[in-house]
View 1: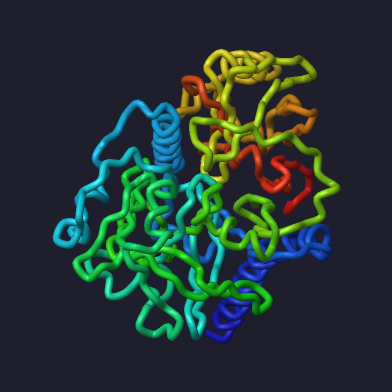
View 2 (view 1 turned 180 degrees about the vertical axis):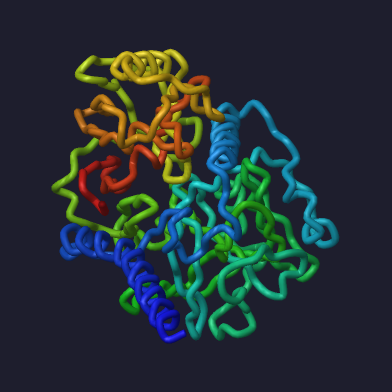
Length: 453
């Protein structure tokens, strides 16, 4: 019995060390990157977590199969394409919310913005006294919201307690006459509604069918280091349904006057940067000026298709030094929430052929979901060719093997790119571990390697 107790004690010691080791993976690499890149930075800094990281403060209730992640990623891309083509308009699920029906002036139509299960997670503080909430970060969305009690219709399961407006001495809802209420349509792609008590109702609907409906509000946003933003405009969600994991809500970083970036810009400057981590490390989001000199830059491109998204010009892709040209007419978006990079079909086909030729000695595997260039074996066993994404002005992402190929299961690795009809989207698999700066004030985007490990 004594021997058994000793063995159990040793087992628990080892288990504790294993958990400690996992935790250190999530903190040490980010800490080094943060000291290297953010010590001379002004602004507000957040820790970013991969949505499937064991260190995420808001993991999904149950692990999602990678095929499910890819199917929802495809729904996000389809929503983005529809949003850009402006050719379709469907009634969103949010428009059927009971919150809109009894009080609303109108029932809006929506194409939906975009969301997916690939969005990264951080923490914010809200209210007075401030309480901490885990939220999704999305560069493809302009509007921020959190779930609010009493959750008149529905709140999905979240980590920690739901925000209680009555417990915050600085909370207030906004009337329908507020200028921010008038700005909702450009921010959410849905017109506002008005309650019988003259409170502005927002509707944020997403391409995968997720949505949030609630009251447009203001409160104090608390950030790292004791910094605060008074009068933060956001949605107080009363009907929130869909794939938000166990987060409390979402913060939007797209280019719109209601986005978190625009609200902080007068204080911090019109720029933000991030490093999107892998599942085994932590990254950062920094809103405000940073050490912009060490990046290689490409201009932001204006587009009449959607002024809130971040467009740039992808000029070519190289594989083993061989250049694949990208047509100048290609519209390219960089997006933190899209998992797999999309390329116009002819460009993708050329990339697929070049990678397959370089891996000619390896056995091919069947297609996996939206990924059709697959091989038997794990990524660590493949001699993946060097791939580089080249942008206007010479800025480039020189991709490590793990940013080119992805293990979809224990015995199959696939090219982490997929075809699209015409729009190119630079997804987060390709951005992982790079520092990326959105210098909106100077209309440029910069890249630097070695951001968060």
